[in-house]
Image 1: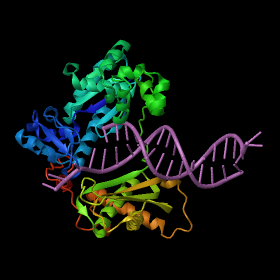
Image 2: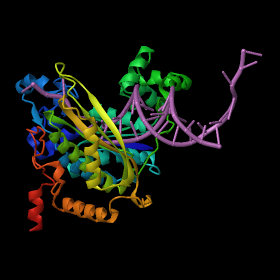
Image 3: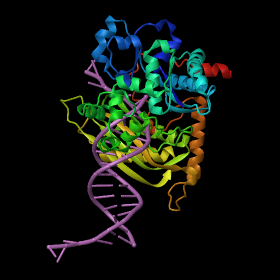
Image 4: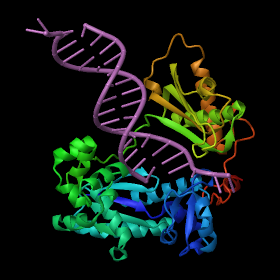
Length: 419
DNA sequence: TCTGGGGTCCTAGGACCC
DNA sequence: TCTGGGGTCCTAGGACCC
């Protein structure tokens, strides 16, 4: 059997841990630049606030209903996530961290009787240890475990854990479960399915596998099999290295001066390089893209992107920033104002498995030493303590007007401990 | 005024190979 | 009338996830 532990309203729950007075009140967390709502408490959901809704559209509601608003604080959420995962890991045979707020659990070898108790225990202990409420779902496959965890969120009498095992129970649950809520069925397929008279997960199960494959490819067929209790999405207890690494941001205002965009692109490339070195990789292809604000109908629009191969695969920030900036020059057009840009590294391989290039025009060892010094400093003294000059001193600041403290990782605390 | 960011997998079609 | 056949690799686009 497989389990899914899913944190309830995760970002909001993290904020509440450090401000218990927010319990029972409507709370939302916003995306970068304080743009959209990306996490909502149950009270905020009850007010009709939608996922992804731009905050300026609900300002009246926020004021009238006294909704508490937070900017996103990823340092805090990342650290809380690690604590939640550690807590779960202590209680079970193996976990697969699937996202910042979800983990699959491998329960092979655990008896049915024990499972029922364990689900509730995991939820209770994690809450006690971290303050974060989680919903457990346990069933035969990942897709069914997802559905089970949904149910435990919906029905309080389940005590935060739903164990879905018997055929008859599964059929009953699927018969009322909306097809668009099934893991793996997104908006497009849901629409197609509904147009074909398939409204519930059970309707989908009753469709023929040939039809499902012809309409939704092998991916859709896997979902179909998973609902039929045939496990197709395997449990992975180790994290694969990333095949591409991306950093992109919207700017808080439109930028038309290339100097400003250089700084942003340098920062993106530098950030990607750091992630690349963390997985001990080198990359040999960079993509840079810039785009205008597509909400501004009064302005000319463009999306420009360029892919640049790199002769000698590298992990050096110096090199990668330089190449990214040269790429930017090729797509930048002074006639446009840009709202967003990004850098994507791809063709990633393991550094130790990569052969050198005798025509290489820079000294690899020197760069490697420099980069490890750079990483050491930034690990020890905090991210972005040491940066490339190209990133600029004046960072292009994002709006972040409702930011909570870095309760669990703050620099001041670390200094105090050190002293 | 204001609209997120970072990934994965699959398929179809074109280039190229022998 | 009639135009080889079987592969691989790459890319763009489309779907999905959180």
